[in-house]
Each structure stands twice: as C-alpha cells, then as structure tokens.
Amino acid sequence: MAAIKRKVKQRLRVDRPNRPGVRKIRDNATTEGRWEIFALNVAKGVSHGDAYAAAGYHDKSGAGAAKLMRKPEVAARISELRAQIRARMKITVETIVMDLQEDRAFAYRCANPAAAITATMAIAKLLGLLVDKSELSVVMKPALAPTDRREMTIEEWQAQWAPKALPPPNGHA
Image (cartoon, rainbow, N blue to C red; front, side):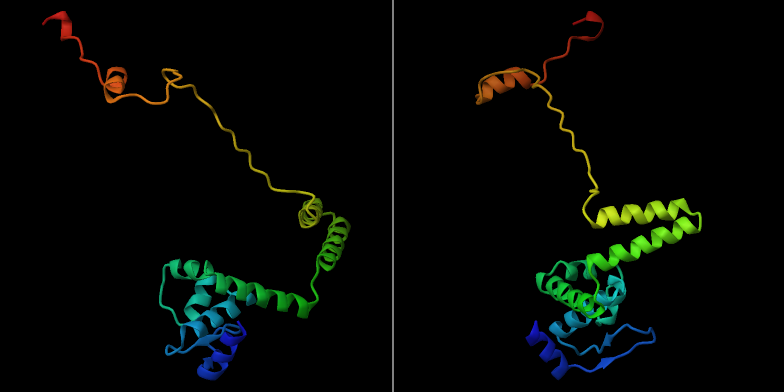
C-alpha cells in the first residue's frame, strides 16, 4: 500500500469539494489513486456512496461502492487507516469502557434508566459478555417411501414416482 500512496502523491491533484472533510479526486486519476481516496474517506466515516463519488466514480446505485469494499486491497487499506486513526486518538477498549461508565453514571444522576441500561449493554457487548445469537433449527423429514437402496433404474423410478392414470369421471369409461 505504500507504493499506492507514493503513486497518489506523484500523479494526482486532490481537490476539496464543498463538503468539509471529504476529499475528491480529479477525473484523470489512476485506479490506485481512486481506491486510495475512497479508502481515506471511508476511514474518516464518510458514507460509502459519498466516498465512491468523491473518488471520481459515477455510479448512483451504490453497487460500485459495495464492489469496491469487497476488494481485499481496499479493505486492507481501510483497516490500516482506521488503525492509524485509533492510534492517533489513543482509543482503546479501556477508554471506551471508561467513557461508557461515565455515561451510565450520568444517566443515573439524570434519572434516565433507559440510557443507563443502554450504556450497560454497550459495555457488555464491547467486553464480549453479550453475543448476538441466532437460532437455526433444522427439521429432518422422512422420505416419502423409505428405502435402503440408493440407486434405482429408470423403470423402477418411473414405476414408483410417475403420475398414475386418473380414473374416468363419474365412473364412466
């Protein structure tokens, strides 16, 4: 990714659009440069669609942004940028838990039990004490005609499963 950063600095001229904090790239950019601008914006918290547009792409549906997010190089770069941001801001699990505990205490002082419960649940999820679970139940149904045989000839299969002739209506032939 360092090579991509160097290419971006050498080849691209970056503009700032009207939205503060969103970097935009000119239309003559290389693919790596567009990916870098997209990754920078996503890491900063810009929506995927806005980051995709800021990188110079013209897809309005959002499918292009989703496709770009699935690229391993882009996902790795976004993770790398987010790690740099976390390190710069000195954000750790401990600091988040301390903030949530302060918020919980404040909610109790303000007589807001819902906010206190929300802070408690957030702490529990963050520490891995609560896990969102989904239950999967599989219903095993017996076969219509149980048999030990695994293979049938075509004639046997047709004799067992082919539609039978219907009786004539009202018993008349």
